[in-house]
Image 1 (cartoon, each protein chain N blue to C red):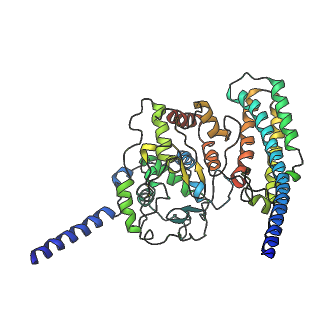
Image 2: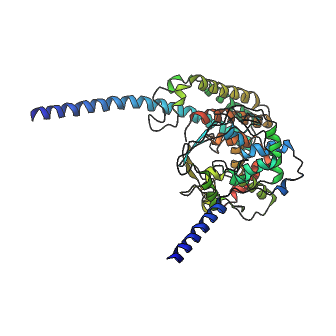
Image 3: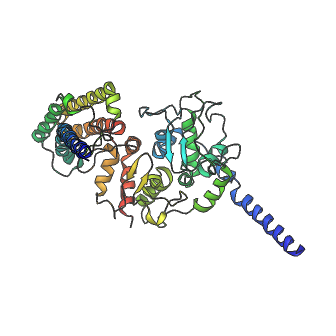
Length: 155
Length: 292
């Protein structure tokens, strides 16, 4: 009887401890997920400024367009290594759509991120000159976003 | 008793005859394809609008203007896993040796040159609405694509779905010559309907299916669940409040109104739609906004 009580208590303590450890671990992973989602949000916001002009929803403003494009270049230049820790994929945790394939294809992911940076630089060269140049630079940016989302983001 | 047996025999024979008739592979009217002059430039537009490369290019191939249609991509379904075949112009492993009528039967009737039914993972019920001219132009374009000598892989489909003859019954139930949207008021809506219902086959993913895999046309483009792809959003106005401009811009660049970007299989569609004239993307958007 006593043995049963003690072993049950030990088990409860052990389970509790592992839950706390898992909790700390998953908090760190969640922080990384939030950080990279924040980076995506920065892309979306600045693309929105450029896209509203491209679509004709707001008047073309060379200075605002240039600022947004420069932001894209800055955001795409962030070193994102620590935002993609092992185990932060959509099959391992909730709250992310990042496919596990990312971690088995890092060189390709890096190449696609590089393409995004190139498209941002091209936009920065175009956005401040005139609306037609800005509009032409939107397509390649969309292609760069889509290339990575096609391969590495689940529904 | 003898009389009952006779009646039963007649009923069984009638049933077999009906099965034979209903499930027999059908052919296009050859007359409609006679004397057509083909135009490969228009064929390129048909090709991109119809999304051929999205399924028939090799797995993970980059989207290009003149793809190699090697096949090999897999498509999980409730009935088994389908593997896209080689449809490059290779005469042995592809479709290079086909006549225009054989090609038309394949894409519009879902019937192979040797008379077997294709599985409806291949959207021939949509392509059935293509004009004979577009079919001829499409073939002219595809004849000029690079050939691949990679053999096609068999589908992974179990009993009873591996009996292709039964697909004749599926076609009898679900293939139709009628448009889903029966009346269109403007040339733009007419073009939009042709692009959505005949070429781009949007309904194949965005419309829910019944237990037998037939499209529920009374829930046209209201969203569905696809094995391997997950939840596919509804795009009819009852499900999505994007403007005509939002829809057209999304098809051109992949950017949603919130400047998220397309993901999954839809990125293929955007790559195709970006190759069409702006007027075609606007026509698709107009058609979608005009849905109930």
